[in-house]
Image 1: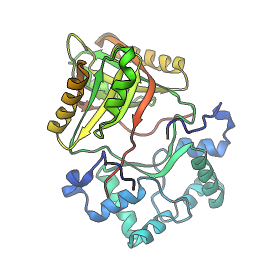
Image 2: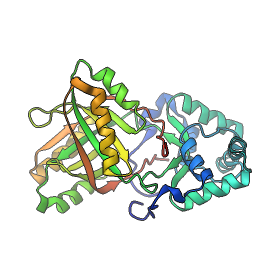
Image 3: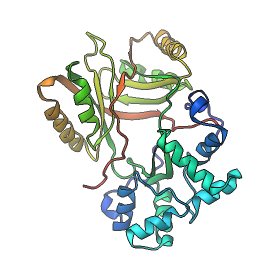
Length: 161
Length: 174
């Protein structure tokens, strides 16, 4: 999906209702049989307008979906790892890392540690096997930075303030 | 569902937390609810359940923390939040618990984690993902975090993303 999304020049292209729907329902979307009606009453518009507006936002790629946001896995194991990849090897190493099904995020970043990826598997042993395979095949030293504690409070974040 | 291998498999976590019907609800909603007047009724019909049962189960999963929130989920990138900076901080071990919570509570920080140092190569133990509309926007927010951490931080860096090479969304095995 990345890259296929039309990027807005400015958020000013959005209507007041669109901004409202985007900003105010990053949590607390009503859990009831007619949630769009509930939302319409909160916003002082009709249910049809709410549904049309959300459909349009979704079609334009501005909301990815309306629905539950699930917590990350609590069982299994995962880690964040980083490699320091020489520039001329970046594409090959990046493709190799991405080829693992256990790697679900892989970013190139501006730093001497320039390749950052998340490895997720059923247990720590499996995670370690993937890290070893990447380190052995690339011959590059690897930083293994497993999560020790989360301070993450996922409430969404204000888009306009 | 696609044929991709799941990177999120609730069968292990599930045991006590989720039964087969909960998992069906998760699979059916993870790509979003249908945008129709009675979306949970549509979901119930699809799964052969009563809508009251679906609503009760979603509420129960939210209470147990399996569902974090119910949302119209914005696509931050499409909305112009194109810069994301992974800020990394060397925070005093004695204070990281308290300060990490304060940083995690900032509204522009989307993820905030404590991770191990690897001395001498890597001295940063606090990671905070900062989103902004521009690099200047991210930098302003990073300065605010630096101010908050004050003397309890002995250095920081911001690693800007250059390319997203792979990003697989949450996919739960059905």
